[in-house]
Amino acid sequence: MLIGIPKEIKDHEYRVGATPEGVQILVAAGHKAVVQSAAGARIGFGDDDYRAAGATIVAAAAEVYAAELIIKVKEIQRSEFPLIRSGQILYGYHHFAPDRELLDAMLKAGAACVAYETITDDAGHLPLLTPMSQIAGRLAPQVGAWALQMANGGSGVLLGGVPGVLPANVLIIGGGTVGENAARIALGMGADVTLLDRSAARLAQLDAIFDGRLKTAISTSHALRTLLPAQDLVIGAVLLPGARAPHLITRADLKRMRAGSVIVDVAIDQGGICETSRPTSHTDPVYVEEGIVHYCVTNMPAAVARTATLALTQATLRHALHIADHGLRDAVKNDAHLAAGLQTFGGRITHAGLAQDLDLPCVEPQQAIM
Image 1 (tube, one colour):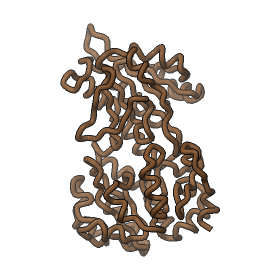
Image 2 (spheres, rainbow, N blue to C red):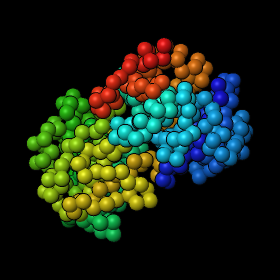
Image 3 (spheres, rainbow, N blue to C red):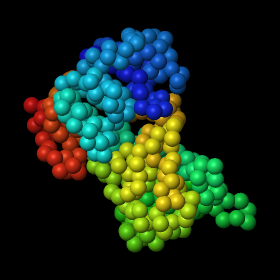
């Protein structure tokens, strides 16, 4: 199969769909790889590295998008829409739920979109989302600490405090991979950390992991609204696979928070947990609404793109090989976990969570590929 790896064009997106080592594995399996020039240059993967791995280097994105299978990181950008064609396999993060224009464009093009964020495993986890969730979770307290600085619009509170001065209060909403990793870093920075989750069993697990240092509570509207006014930093870490994130924090809630407090909405890829959240970029990462600093960068792991690319290739390569070796139809037919990642095929939505969220019809993946 001809596999294309384009240069990412989203703002400050330096990750790349596969490392040279990953390309070498694909080529060794009998496939051809076309990599856009400078796709990995900013993170130490030069064109010569990809050539040595067996790839052909091309200058134009159109030459890459001539491939049958496209391996990338972030969702297709508006300028790339004309490059997509019917039957083409787009393997990457898609985040369709909050972006109807993107979804409609892929449906119109007839692309087969396989989403990293909804591929499952035997444990019911999301193994291709996990590495980026780990990274985003670990970054969240760091960027939150940065946003709390006066020069960035924050209240001037140091996350870990100093002797004689209390540390910042940090509230993490959601106890999944993002939440756990955010708690790890926030506690390590010396903050006073509380985590909310709907699962008592998960909270017990987190209590054991952090040896009682992490405060926990069942996530309810009452608990959230009781805690919010005292928080310096709120981290949104809620995930509903394939669907929009629920709006848990309203504009009215912001008015009850301390001026200069910070919300890092990691869930912004799926629409965000705040009524006032809107996507931002690494170029312009924050804005102030109702006196609260919002950090809503949609590609947080791009800030540590080399680490992120290495971790991502380790997670995504197995399914890429499976698709390339067997073709998408047989790959989906024989792998229910991969089928869970198929979100569009032949102009139809094939993921129930996405379809339900948007109140649109859905066709089962196995039926769509027949």
